[in-house]
Image 1 (tube, rainbow, N blue to C red):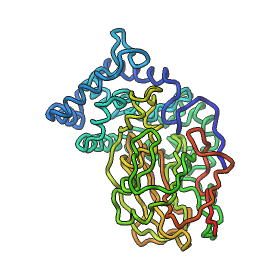
Image 2 (tube, one colour):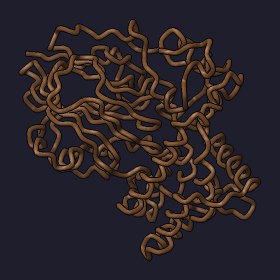
Image 3 (cartoon, rainbow, N blue to C red):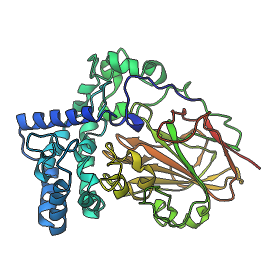
Image 4 (cartoon, one colour):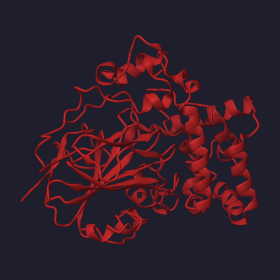
Length: 427
């Protein structure tokens, strides 16, 4: 079953950022004005980032060059002096500082679900930005910053956006039009304050009611179901052990997706199914098959990396809402979770679910344990604010017939409901 999409605004894929670049620039400018009107000392975690940049000669060079390398021409400059909106790394730090005590407001005209991504949009598309945002020390610090922001998003202070404000509240008129069946689909109490949610994160990881999203043929081990409420992005076959994942076509590279796991060789020549999640949707992961959890763990990675082929080196211009066009590339480099499942059906055997964190608080929380037997449609884990793509990996011996509900995979595909059939084994 395909979920209908509300035609309220043209969003970038997944609805995390607006497709109208002018709106995104307006949001950044408004944030700049708010920060400048209410100057605050840098929080310790942001001050720590400043010290890292200034005390490391390579990072100091890159974080200066990335702003110099943003072209000083429209649409990349939006100031009277022909400079980028985000002027330098100190300006960047002040803007990041301002995000740390903000939660995403609803806006039907253009939801900015990735506020930090919006701040870094153009610098991350430069050569210096490409190098800096692959740096292990930078990503370690970004993880600390994002985890600190997660504390705020998990606090009651973040509930101010869970209001009935008609334009910007998540239970206001505009939001109800965008998510019309919220109260009937999700566990909540419309009579309670904030519908009973204790924080923004509590709202974000909301659960469906028991009668929602039934599992397709739960006792048929030949049916594979959708592991996330998501839209199909790509199906790739005959996957190589190593491939040039950073080039324009972004082929999959198993050695890097699976971080050299001991099971990697078993998937060489196999199939990958990738799909992306919507900002307005459900963010928990369910098992696509009946089987046993063989191995489950998380991998640290990047948060704001995009390949040069999608940056300013692209002859068509940089991806204005990166990392949308970099989803294949991110499977190799981003923060992610790997869950290996030995399916009850021997014709599937060992498979792997890969949750890929994209930008912001890409916290991949695994809720199953090794050795656990799990039923198709049972929870595997969840994304905490952030994370918007996932993969299913199958061995080359598995003969799959995909059912994408009358559509082709790609950036314009529609949401297939979680627990719906997406493939079956062909003998």
